Image (tube, rainbow, N blue to C red; front, side, top):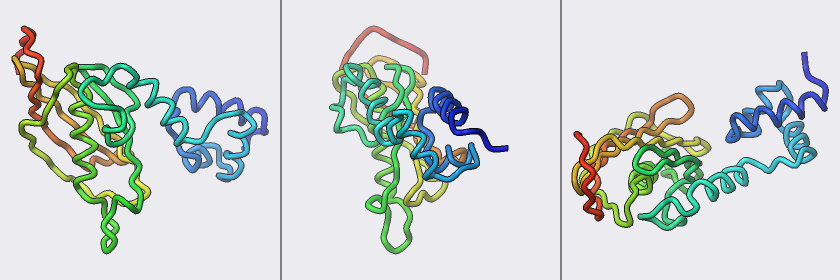
Length: 192
């Protein structure tokens, strides 16, 4: 049974409060209505489109937090970050990211997203990738949204290990173990 317009708009606002990064297509499927109906509902409720919600969340999230990179140097959009702990970024794959012949995303874009996230999550002015072990698990295509999650696994002296896993929906597409050099020589020592 379909909801009435007012009730659907209220539920839409509640849904986007808990899961703000849903596409209009995903929302339309959730409510079993057309994408155009969702776009009209969003406009009436003053809810911006996904890209604007991502930009807003990214700006709030990284403002003053990321130390080793400038905001425009991050590949993808960081939507959550706890320095020296964990971070999440989103990269929407466009036709510019894929090989024309196969339609598969170029690996360096997935690597760049993961690597910049591994740098950004570290609480240091200078962080560099010293070594990494990568696994490309499944091809990514134009139109896919890649969600990368970084977790700082250990720190010893000027080195940290950051694990990054990327997925499209629930499907893993990439993973990497990044051994990072950190400039700050603090006395924080943790077992690797």
